[in-house]
Image 1 (tube, helix red, strand yellow):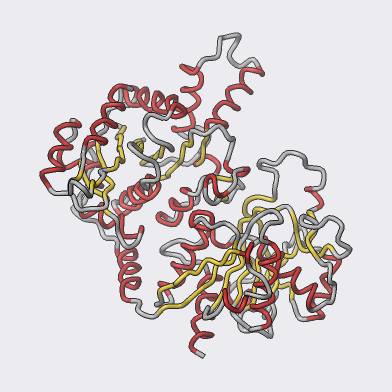
Image 2: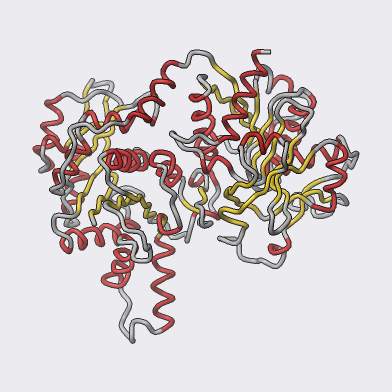
Length: 532
């Protein structure tokens, strides 16, 4: 087993997840099997209880683990399917060690960071609970070198390097700032970051220099010399028009070959990335634009990261550039909806929890339905589309979700039966992949091209089946049903151009080489609608 560790220095948000994903993609091109995992230093057990403003979107794996958004990058780049084993936090590490201590597994020993915490970290790095074997395990360490929370993870890496000689590569991603007043690029922060790593017993094998300006060969030589790194193991990561250009840029600089050389493995000169480069070529050749409104309450790009990327994938394969206009649902009203949504070709009504911004989503659903604009509701967005229909078509003025208004007399969205007695917030929702049977002849069935699908969920509330017949009779059809629990998963209005809502999260399954069929169909409908 070969191990690649990706750390970051100087500042956060440099793109360790994109670099890790790019490495995985390039190693796959060489014919190796890989998996990528994220180790986050925060003490939360998982990001499921974190506000999106704190940590961006919460990604969900097939087996129902709430994880960091970087796992979405891993899947979109490499087409692997991550599991709970791919996401580890300090909270999970300490919880496991404390549980073992309570059971008496340590036979009365004093529990310490070294060796007990570091041993548990190493066990997770090696994926001892995973029956599948890989050629490479890529492990991204969250945070920045110098963070107190990261110390146990770095100590575990130091130990693994000595325990697995010749099988470990440490890649360090740092920032080269540009001082405009002096018109100079500065390497000192990178030197200090590497020095701090060396003080922890870690010497980076490879440096990736994040930069907003092209770095000359002289500067690259200087970094290599001062940081004790081979010159061919120093590469730069410039700002690019798309994150999907990063693997090609890394390949052009020989990052994959440097990694394989360090590990004594054979490497092709430049393995083909045909499907990937075809995607980039189509993206570059798209001229026309389709305008999609994203109606949500979080004014933060990372809060809807997977939805944004899924729209971009679908746009490329429909030969269009997707122009996304964010519309804050908290400030969307019947008085300004015409102005806020003017000129759009389609809209996505986004997920989210809590009361803030819900009425704006109801207004957006009304506007999409009455103006016959292609409209796509996801999770909570689907629930608000149901609420809007109940109010304005079925005539139930107080219709609502019992999450938002427990006193409503028409709870068309209600809490799931198995959720009623749950008191703990973390990891207790309906999570992960569930089957869904599609109604023959429906738009959804035509989009998927098969009678049964599996999609990932993250919710506590559901369509109230007591109202199903009324909705069906009035024109909103329930076309996707969970075959075991009889839960409504998809609703659509056949009389409109494209008006579909899903209780699940289709954005988690869209990748660069396999765009999600619902997003593909939605963007196509938006294009056709704008052309007509």
